[in-house]
Length: 298
Ligand code: GDP
Image (cartoon, rainbow, N blue to C red; front, side):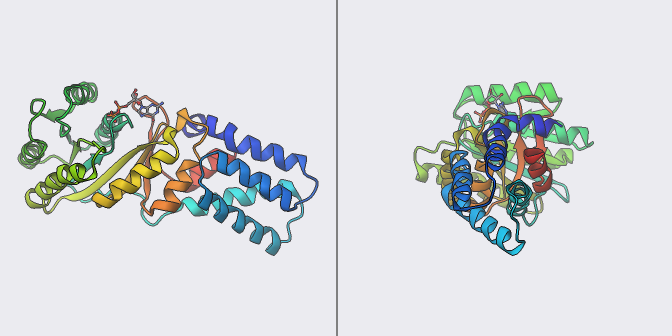
């Protein structure tokens, strides 16, 4: 239900338009395919991904001998569900101890996602520790601390300007000595210079490898769905510098262009593991392709 509400703008932007087009056609012809194509492209599904969907749809319509436009919707839903289906979409946190490194540029919802995740894990009975690894902004440290208090977890922090590697090092040692199940680390995501980013993240990754070799590891990239194709570009850049194991796509509730999730999935080859559908604690969900497609097309 939360998912359906969270996707309401995208439903308006994609599903309702598709419905209207399908209703206005008496038969399935090339013009109909073109109109569907247009809807998907304007919803940030991305050109390549849209082409894949429409090609697939043409084939299905042909092989199933579908002639009623109203039957097309179910086919689109299935194609999208298939497309969103990935290999393994769970966070890499078993067995414990686990460490989640959260990366992404400022403003995408990194801190919020960390807070929501911490809350979810605590509710599941796991022990959680946060690390304020974005030391470049005092606000980032303060904000994470607010979330730590709200959720009721401890936080390891240094002052602004401190070495992020030192924060992560301390946090790992604290997690070890406290037998913490899951350590969630914020990182700085300054994308203005790829080399800087690589250096900054590289140092952190090295420390994690060295200090926490046996921990389950997730490198979670947070991207903002409302930024559309920009989100794809960011993800591509981060993929070049880090071994991203999962994506959290935030603010899906804030955009009619939630179709971007298809482009993320199709063009990046990294599983979307989490989606953000609101600002509240419980508005972070594990991504499930079928549920998503159902919520979108119901
Ligand atoms: P950071 O700079 O990446 O750490 O970003 P923040 O976590 O501070 O989030 C930036 C803004 O986005 C805040 O106002 C959050 O409440 C908001 N936000 C984060 N995730 C979501 C979401 O899934 N939906 C909505 N509507 N807002 C979100």
